[in-house]
Image (cartoon, rainbow, N blue to C red):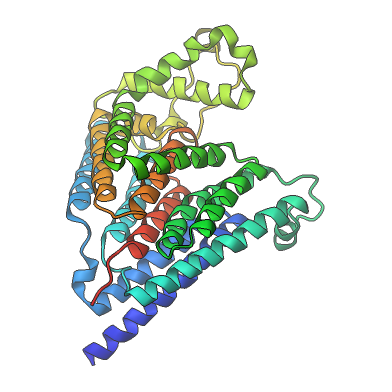
Length: 401
């Protein structure tokens, strides 16, 4: 009976992974909030199926679990004893739970399948990304006709392109594990075409962060293929240094650009003002921070003093993951997140080609996007990160049995 249940669970995991990866990006392009729901549902169902196969499949990666435990204890302590932001404390548990799920499913064996099943999952992911490419082209060429039909917004004068940003970001990041899978099958031309088209879709959709992250990822992939150890060491050191020095760099950035501020696009200058505001707040509580989600509750400085042109109300998040960790969890939190980056680099270094280069590229794209775009705790963004990490975990894993 137990063996039969384990076989059914293994088959269920394969189907769950195929369906999840095939639908994740297409659904995200049509309804961005579905990316959080899709990831949570897939992760939870995989953990249940993994538990049926054997409790060992549920064990998280110990080093990541330890660092997360320290983050959670630190966050709980400052929310209970250090800060007075009730709204921050109310939301912190849910935000940390989502991060825990990402780290858990990315490090556990619950999603691992045998070689034949991995090829099915790789094919499903590739099909899902191909459908997504066609969907991006169709929607942007036909004034979001599918989105308008599904939401009943046929008469709206305009559908802003930024609603596709999360979908195109996921498309770019997930193209890397799919490309590595194709490369491992010696489908080199298809692998290159998939990454190229994904980056092209980001450009066509006017998603600047996805486009730049894709271009950075290409450079890192080439460097990692030529000199993997040096690339990972330099990338880890640069990322770690930026995490630890972000407040002092970002508080100065706005002043450095004053002389040519009129030549900076308003969207970029607005982002720089948010960084400046966030960095100022960091220096008010540098050790423990203000609490998760605190920036929306912090007053803006006097415009006559700050010189802000576009920042007229508190932002929802600092638009920079390093700055957000500093602002919310202080120096202790920043140090712990730097350790997470170091642990991730160690995992990537242990992979074989072509997975190592692809994982380094996806990590570089993820880090860049996190430093300029989405909020650290946004469920859709964590869902994208979780699906990308899970794709590498499943497709690059050694076959069982």
